[in-house]
Amino acid sequence: MKDLGSYLKKTRISNGVSLEEAANDMSISLTLLENIELGNTKAFKDIYELREYVKNYAKYLGLDPNMVNDSFNEFLFEKTSKISLEDIQAALKKEEEKDIKPVIHSPYTIEHKRYINLVPILIWIATLLVIVSISLLIIRNICEEPVITNELGGSMEDLYEFTN
Image (cartoon, rainbow, N blue to C red; front, side):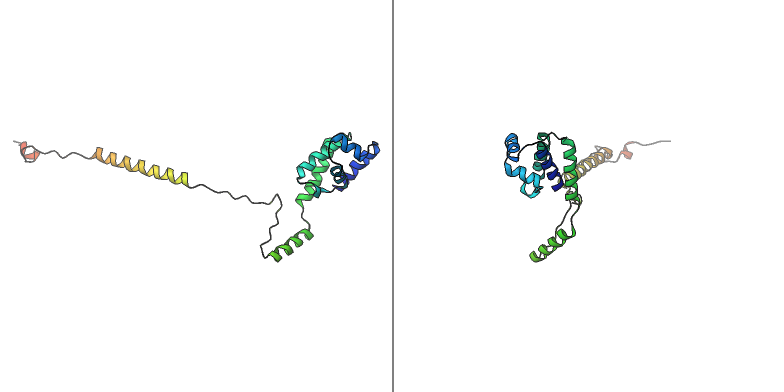
């Protein structure tokens, strides 16, 4: 970011514009422009906010905003995709002092856990079991042969006599 900031500063100076004049024209504070030209990213709350300031500053200076945005993206990639050994060791030391497991993540390696809601699945299974049970009871009652009896109390074979 320092290279990009110094490039913007050189362009501003070559255009003959003072820092105060640029801040007034862009309606932003003087310290913001100074931090952009110094490459001080820690002065900004959000990296996307910084990107917009750099893009608008490039437009103000008459530069190609796409080219400046590409340079900013390269800086951003360098910053977020590589964690220096010193940073890792410092984080480990700090975490050991807290007696907590160290947590160092790159935005590209964070695992997102997926949780499955079992309630709808259990409701479907219970509904299916009820439907199957009712269907089996209905089929059993339909398929059962009724017992045919004689009103006189005898069996049906007694009613019919077969003669030769």
